[in-house]
Amino acid sequence: MNYKDIPILELLPQRPPFVMVDCLTDYNEKQSRCQLTIRQDNIFLENGCFASVGLIEHIAQTCAARLGYYNCYILKTGVRLGFIGEVKNLSIVRLPREGETIETTITVIQELFDVTLVSAEVRVGKEVIATTNLKIAQEEASPNPSQERKK
Image (cartoon, rainbow, N blue to C red; front, side):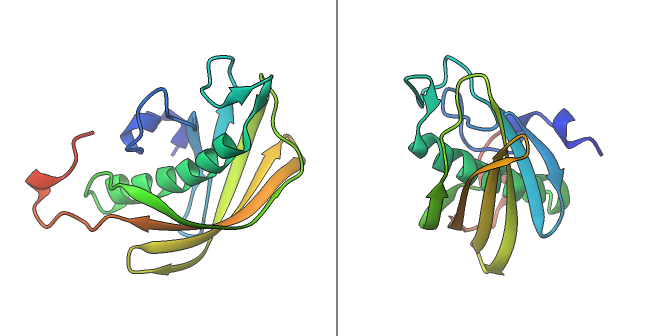
C-alpha cells in the first residue's frame, strides 16, 4: 500500500491551519513515519525556522496519523482525539528551516489501554535534528458508531 495516497485529513482530527504533517509514509504495528515540508505559511514558522513547539506538534501528529490509520483502516472505527500526556527527554539539535522536509519516525515502546508511549526521531535527510519520548492518550472509543466524530 502507498500510504502517501491516503488523504492526511482522513487520519487526523486536526484541521488547517493546524495540520503539521503532509503525509503518512510508512506504517506497521511498532513503527510509523510522516513527512512535513516547512512552508512559508506555516503558523509555527518564526524567522525562517520551524519553532520548537511546532516540532513537538509535528511529532504528536505523527503519532495521531499512526493511530488514525490503525483506527480507520484496521479497526474501522474512525479517528479518535488524542492528547499529549508527557514530553520527555526532548533533544533538539537544530530547528528545521523553511523549505526543508522533515521526516519523523515514531517507535512504539509500550501501549496500555488508550495510552501509548513512543520514541521519536526527526530527520532532515540523513541528519537527526531532534529526538524525544511522548506519552499520548486517546479519548475512549465511542460505544455507538453513530456517535463517532465525523471526518
